[in-house]
Amino acid sequence: MNAIRRGTRIAIAVARKDALAELRGRHAPGLLWLAIVFAGILAVGRLHQLETDDGALEHLAAYPVDRRALYAGKALGGFAVMLVLGIVLLVAVAILFAVEVASAPIPLLVTIVLGAAGVAAVGTFYAGLTVRLRAREVMLPLLMLPILAPLLLAAVKATAAALSGDPFGELGAWIGLLVAFDIVMIAAGAATYGFLLEDG
Image (cartoon, rainbow, N blue to C red; front, side, top):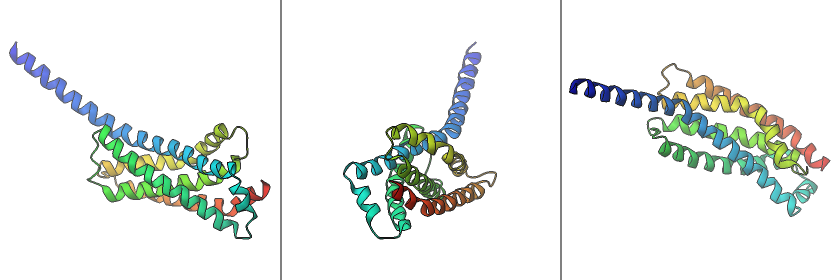
């Protein structure tokens, strides 16, 4: 009887350990990037709204400068906020889910940098598009989230691969997708952001 109880306790302990490892491995990267994306949407929307409320956005639009420079400045500001948020949230997820992030600091940092750049690029454009709308708090996430879906997928997969030691050699492909996404979105935003200012 004692042997059966002991065997049962061991089996439960092993099952619990495996279940926790599976939950951490599968859900921690997803929760991390969902938190980053939603925090980013709020942050870039707030940055534009502050400038609209005090009239600074209209003054920026009146400056005789290259509109791409204005977009770059706004996107860099959003990127800085996103990068700090990403690092803070990575530490929080590592603590809450007991995820070992020290084993792959460089791939994780690269993923966060590229993900933050993509969210900032998309967010700067759509925040400029919706900042003067009455329902901007609703419209901004509705417009951004479908566009950010490829970034979210690639960032989650890259983070999961980095945390698992990249056993299938997928990390490079997901990082490549993030780079391509950033290039396309930054180029598109820089080319069209000036029209948003002029329309306002």
